[in-house]
Structures are given as structure tokens and as C-alpha cells.
Image (tube, rainbow, N blue to C red):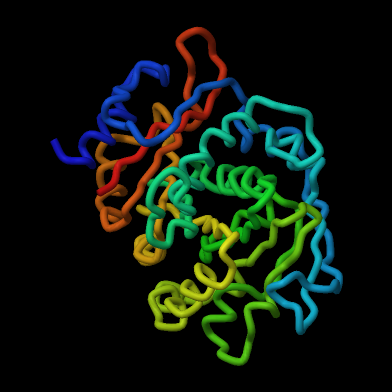
Length: 312
């Protein structure tokens, strides 16, 4: 049985209790299960309209020491109401879950306890289909890693056709990734955004472009990725990617990544869709999975679970 078939069978046909998974097949990664509420439903039913915060000029961090960057205020109250992690929150189940999710990713990225994965600090979060929770997971993973003592995080909105980060974070974003790729005179420091969460910066998707796939596959993107990966040894770059089966941008982006986190919605994503999505990212060395919106046997609550590594 191939790696793809093993992954698909495990996530589609398993009983919805993480403890029942075959741990012999996933020896290198952690897993957990706990109860949370479905973020998107809470957002739409309770959070109300976004209160967009204007960006204001501020002194830059080490990325932009010679220029000015922009500071945006993430709406932490809104994020917490959606069930997300916030820096000032009390210890929570979802925070514990993402602590377990990030540990193997950081170990792979920085060689903690073994050899580092090539480009392991480039982490793409994706899904097979829209609506599986990838953007919510991207944000929470980024905030969780930003809480590490020795790490900084750049969260890139790479879902260039349908950016979701502004909606979740309650901020207004302007120029970004696509603009830098289009315009050689535009520096990365011109579009990066500092946030009110320490050690977390944002790179917006930028203005839409019908040639988005070609821009992501361009030599300019290759140079940008290399610069992001190698300039600062303590940095993790998280890409909120488009769904793999919705656009071609995701599979192009995947070729640059050292690690991929695949978000799978329980009882919705078909085995065929999951197999097809995984077949598009086989070249990545490490692929982990987050089982999202699953209903436990002991109750009707939701949980996230990190299943493990399916890679070469």
C-alpha cells in the first residue's frame, strides 16, 4: 500500500478517536485529541462584522531596519471569540493542541534531536477542499510558534485568489506577495506588516492577478523563498495556501516547501479527494495531517488531532 493510500485510509475510514490510529505507521510525530468549537461557525454567528484596523507607520524589526514598516492591530477579542489562540489568554485546550502540533514541526525545522529537514522552516498549511479550516489552523499555528522564546514567525497569506487572513484577523491589508513578485523595485520590507502580537509579522497576499500561478512559479518567487528561508536562522515562515483541488497555485507553492500540514475535515473529505490532493504534494519531504471538525465517540464535540508524518 502506498503512502498516499495509507494516509487516506487512516483519515477517511478511521473511527473518530485519535487513540485508535496505528502508531507504528507514524513514529516521528505527536498526536492529541481535545474538544473545541468550530471556529468558522462561531465567527459567522457571533463575531459580527470585522472592525478593520488601519495600518500605521512604525519602526521596523530586523527585517526592515533601514526603512519603515507598518503596524497593524490584530483584533484579539474577535480572534478569541472565534475560538483562536491569543497571547494573553489563559491556558486552553486549543493552545495545548497546537503546542503538540508545532513540536515535531520545529524539531524538523531546526534539527532538534536529529537532522534538520531541508527548508524545514518553510511550512505550508493547506487542505484538499475549501472550508476545511486551513486558515484558522495557519493562524493558530503561527501564534503558537510566536510564543516560543527563540523563534519569530512570518505568516504569509498565499491564498492569493481568496485571501482569508484579513477576515479572521480583523485587519485591512494592502500590497503584498503578488506585488513584490510583479514589481522588482518593491522590497519585501515595503509590504510586510508588524503586529501587536510579539514576534509575529504578516505578508499579505497583495493585489489579485490573473497570472497568480505564473507569479508563484516564477524565478522571482524562487529567490524570495530562498531569502525568506535563509536570512534569519530563528524564523519560521507559515504559508496559508489555497486548497489543493481548487487552484493550481497550491501545488506550485508546495514545490518550495520543507514541510506541509494537511488539514482534513472529518466526515466530509472523501477518500478520493484526499488521495488526489496528496498526490500533488508527494515531492515534499514531510507531510503532517490535522483532522479537523471530528465528532468524538464519547460526545458530540469537535476536536483537532495531529495524525503524523507521511513523507519520504
